[in-house]
Length: 336
Image (cartoon, rainbow, N blue to C red; front, side, top):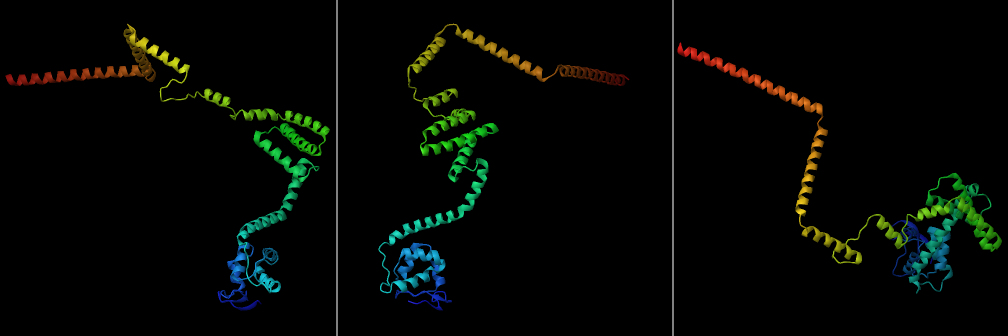
């Protein structure tokens, strides 16, 4: 099996032809193979070897793909021709495992790329936060300090500078306390615990935690208290007495209904109450009308109305005099 340059039967271009060991499959050029298959995918590698009837070695495939990238296919054929002269055929009873292995391979590759890129980010993070926290902290401890400090400020919305300073000191005491616990130094643990409690008290963290917890309903008693304070009443639609309180309320309602409906002389009382209510409503309407129309306007309207009536009377008198004079002329002409 030797690679040679010739016209590709698939694309028609002159390129390096990958020879096939399968009498039913014709070899094609490197470009056609690499454009159809992914060298970084073990399933594709297995498919290529199965098609070309070549033995598939996943370890060798991963090694070649890491070093040769796009040339993996031709380099793999060279390796097969050099190392497996007696077994030039595909035999892979574990092909169903390649997908799982391929996922793991991609995961490892991703982690490797991230680790290669994280060093500049890590150095910048350390530089900024050692200015803030000091130089006597490891990378992991600075992450703990920053996370604890930022989350505490966000949780309680703290802006007082002295309170913020006390919280920073409490964060440092917390990390130092973790150190002492790991080293199992009981004396240091006791001292740091006392110091930590003191800074927590100075920063009023306990009060903030209690205040924040008051906004959360965590027990049935708190739920009942909240419901009662918001005047919630459970509605029942089956008219069933639930307890002695419901029975007592129904008895009181029934007693009042009987007392009102069967009492003598209540009709007159109700009529008096009704008349008083109507009178009060009329007074309210009068008051509203007085408030809407001023006295000056009422006086002006009365004067205008009086003048209008006086003008109408004068006009009517003048008309009557005119009609009388016309009648005299006619009578005089008639007798004449």
